[in-house]
Amino acid sequence: NAGVMQNPRHLVRRRGQEARLRCSPMKGHSHVYWYRQLPEEGLKFMVYLQKENIIDESGMPKERFSAEFPKEGPSILRIQQVVRGDSAAYFCASSAGVNTEAFFGQGTRLTVV
Amino acid sequence: SQQGEEDPQALSIQEGENATMNCSYKTSINNLQWYRQNSGRGLVHLILIRSNEREKHSGRLRVTLDTSKKSSSLLITASRAADTASYFCATDAGANSKLTFGKGITLSVRP
Image 1: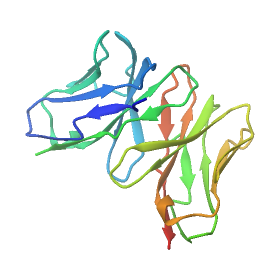
Image 2 (image 1 turned 120 degrees about the vertical axis):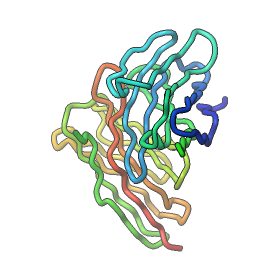
Image 3 (image 1 turned 180 degrees about the vertical axis):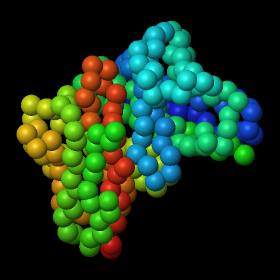
């Protein structure tokens, strides 16, 4: 039973480009969460999705960031027109339901140059 | 505002000793989860303790929860060099189970 799979592990983008981060939840998990971790910091919640629905996006910046979790395929976190301040580690977590263990992927480390 | 706050921020111990890490939080919770993160890696789930539980064990790990004091502790017994990592507590406090993390504790276990 594979864990939460994220790709790519490392992503380098020039300022102004788009970044697409992918997350496949654990088998049987329908709840997906995205978090961002800045250096020497804990993780900060960004968005919570279930299949085809955004449930809570209270942690998402208002502009340039979007997320989806289609009926088929992985969840995608999309950052348009990246800026240096977007450089961070982005983690995806999945769970089988609320009030259960959340398991994390290895993260995508985004570097904007 | 910070929900989970761990202390100490850094802990250095000798292999074989026990390591105790604490976490305090501000609001009522559904559960509290502890994670380990090795440098530059993902988070490994260690243990979940629900609000109606007071203590849980998993191998060399022991977690306690005191909801009256809004605090939790993680005890690692007989520490090993491989336990060197950052440890985070995360609280699940709402209907959506989004987690709020502290800044973490850096544990160094000297061989």
